[in-house]
Length: 207
Ligand SMILES: [Mg+2]
Image 1 (cartoon, rainbow, N blue to C red):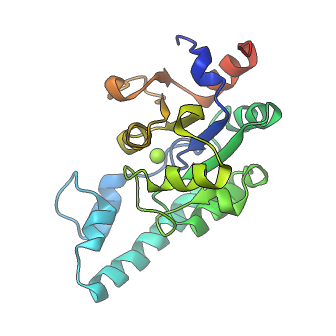
Image 2 (spheres, helix red, strand yellow; image 1 turned 30 degrees about the vertical axis):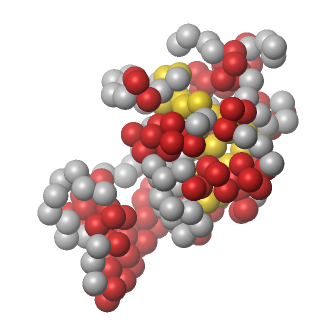
């Protein structure tokens, strides 16, 4: 990893939850099929929004059941606690932007032992802001923190996390344990694990 001091010194850190702060357990093709979706690559939330309301409500309920099942099976990603400790120690603001619901996100944080790091107000789900890659969630967190995109990093494991950072004008960090790094043009920094990021922050000398 090339250490980018400018990025690591930023004061606001916004994380994706599933597959970033947690170990990846979401099998999205299986979720799509459980929800009766036909197109393999389509966006689950957009699909639900396109349905008549009664049908959408039933499938939303099923999605929430699936998300609770997944929350019960996951664990904190390696290095997550250490990274969050280090960021808080240096006075950073930290928040979560997820396409999950805030309620399930808070439940998941409790399950994986990271609930002490985040206030509920700093965890935005799909009911608090337009889903990623729409930048509204980042804009809301930064308004609440009275801060700006130039001081902010968006960290995530998927395309939407990098796109939302670009859309909001933050720096982006891609976490990918496979090291495939599929979207290099959208990532300012790429790491295999949060442990690697925690180490880089520990070794980084503030400018
Ligand atoms: Mg994710």
